[in-house]
Length: 405
Image 1: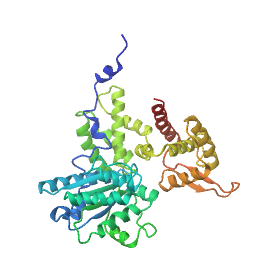
Image 2: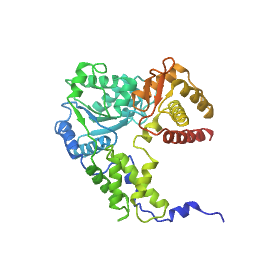
Image 3: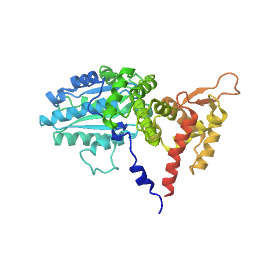
Image 4: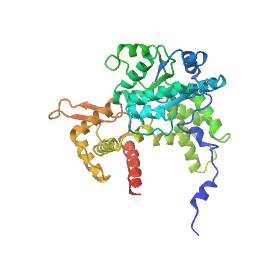
């Protein structure tokens, strides 16, 4: 009789009580060291409850990765929804990731489908979708808090028309009920003269909430809460928490700290250990990197992944800080053949390199003295090339297998 590996694994003891509380998507009831930020949002948006329809609010939340921006916005919006329900106010909140919904059309369609679930995907312009959204809100006496996450990525990719359209829409309704308010979230959202008109710029610059990195003590408190929820009692040593805080405090990144904690727990399970010891955290650090943001790389188009894999593989092979554009293109063509994809022309590749550089995913600079001719040099300052190569290969291999099936 063949060995049943699934039942074997399920019967093993685990240090985990519930891993879901370590998920990147989980938002805890309590957000340590972010109470003042939630209070600031409540003070700014409270008229949505106290005098609905009087004003439209526009707000920006900025800060480094892993500082709780999205979690705060989601927890704040949930509390606003509950307060509205208690007062029979029909307030809704929609969280849209602009890295996934890459155009105005997709953002507005996603918002409209919250109220008209079967609305057709084709046949309307973004402006028409936005007008229909407002009409639905008016007809059904509803209010909407629209949260646009990773808005900085969207603006650099598509421009700031989405902000202009949303704010202009509200300004045109001066004598009508204000139905739509906005929160934009990003690392650093460009609000300069080249991106926005002076009126929109002035409105948004007055309403910016900046999140600082978590310090070591804050990370310790955050991990303590997650351990209580996710792990069996007394399975995580305090020294292990201290080690994780030491590692993650360099970046002030709670996501990274939580990922290290989860990986350390998985190593304990793999070794069938009853305790998560500090060395499991150190080994977890060796397996991951704070700048290797899986959700960012996973959301990239296939051709961008192929290009990044080419750069990572070339850097790993020649063991240099930078490789030339020509070297990357040659490796890219080879990788396209490997994954049965049609390679793109030089101009398109160059545009992708500039785009990836503008979003901080790669480093790109002009060659200096000592190189014949002018070329673009490509490198990674934050992510080890070998680690990125392994991760992207895994993503692309999975996609290739799915296509074959």
